[in-house]
Amino acid sequence: MNPTMWYCYDAYCGWCYGFSPVIKKLYDTCKQTLAFDLLSGGMILNEQPPHFSGMAGYIAEAYKNVEATTGIRFGEDDLWHIQNPNESDWYQDGLKPATQRSFYP
Image (tube, rainbow, N blue to C red; front, top):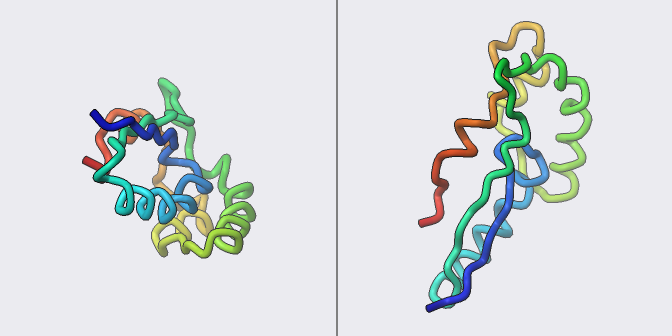
């Protein structure tokens, strides 16, 4: 039985997104000797999820730091919501990504 590598992340965490290439490389390199399991943090869990506009200002600055530090780029869809928070239909609800399996077996 192989030891297990637990990766704790959150689907709404920009730093977790930025770190994803490192986790993918670790998985690709060590999948024969390590079992991998994921634990999603559920950072935004509310009975009534908040509209994205409340966090857009913070994220508009923070994502640039994540990109500059990690080299990863946020997608155009994400950037549209960040740049147009009052037009966005995005309500952040961490329950769904926290309860679904990820890309790792």
